[in-house]
Image 1 (cartoon, rainbow, N blue to C red):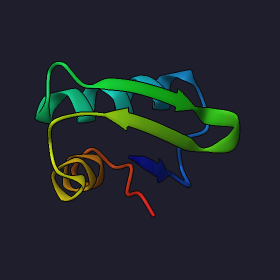
Image 2 (cartoon, rainbow, N blue to C red; image 1 turned 120 degrees about the horizontal axis):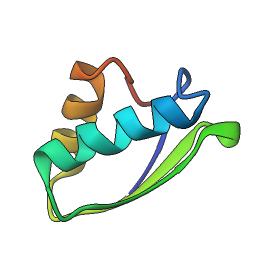
Image 3 (cartoon, one colour; image 1 turned 60 degrees about the vertical axis):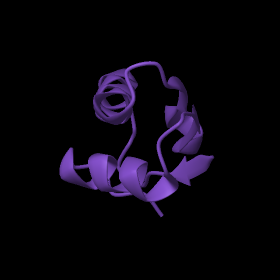
Image 4 (tube, rainbow, N blue to C red; image 1 turned 90 degrees about the horizontal axis):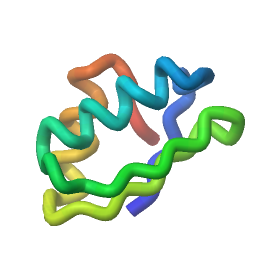
Length: 62
C-alpha cells in the first residue's frame, strides 16, 4: 500500500513514519521517500490501521 504524507519532508520525518507503521506491525517493510512525500508499506495490518497510526503520530496520510 502507498500513502502520500504532506508533512514528511526530511529523514527525521521518515523515521517517525517508519516507527508509526511498525507500532502496528513490527515486521512491516517501510520505504519512505521524503522528497516525493510518499511511503510504501508492506504489512499484514490493514490500510486503516496504518493510516490511524500515522495520523496519531502526526503524519496524516492522504
